[in-house]
Image 1 (cartoon, rainbow, N blue to C red):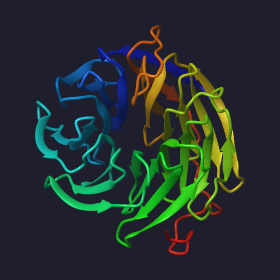
Image 2 (image 1 turned 135 degrees about the vertical axis):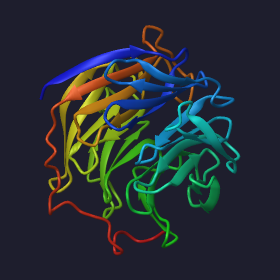
Image 3 (image 1 turned 180 degrees about the vertical axis):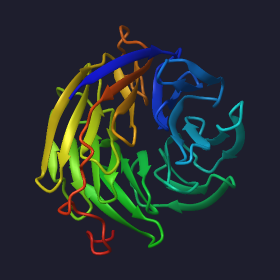
Image 4 (image 1 turned 45 degrees about the vertical axis):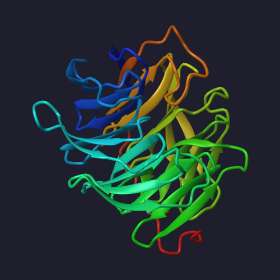
Length: 334
């Protein structure tokens, strides 16, 4: 595998989140309350939205047609931006969460938006109308992230030591526990029934929706440091993890063989607070800062606040008939 990296500096304070839009643009949010649109080919800042929120921005997501950008933060608000307009017009403000909104994710092919919050809830919105749809209850701890693909189902992780896969239409949920003492900070779907998680104990886990426990648990994946972020190439076997140990790591996940193998170790000093990967698996972007996205427990003053663009050759032949998918019989609803 051939890998090249390019670093671009940008935010005045640590960036906390990143999402790709197409193959040449990405968006970042930061503790400086700004949103930046980047040209990842040149590092040029196409657009800077200052004071996009009144407090730290914690999450960004773009709709699959690249029309809407959603951002959320410590101000408890979700903002919807029309990024096709010349000035990235702010069109809606969604309120309802009563604590920090830690994550936003669009359902692919729709404008249905999911949000996660420290108030222990997950909310469903129609981003095109700026309207509230539903609240999902079940987590007993602060919800740290949310992810979604094509089906009306979303994946969340929380400080109640659990992952949950929400079947929105069925009004049910599948619950996955790693340990009674380990909080799961980040999670991403690889395909509808396979997902990856990172935990505060430094472990990376590969999961199937048909199993209550992880298929693979890779302990001390980043030298024992917290896993701050995970990224996946959809419908592929390639994924990535970030921490504060100075490395961005690439992995090959083989659910059928219950294997998770490290395939690359990329030097990236600082806290890797977010990872996003292109659909073709050739480009990965990561936002890197001097502090963790949710706190200031430790600080790496030698790190640069900005983004890292990684270009790589990956194997896209990832689908296998043996891989397990979600079915109505998967797990017991809880």
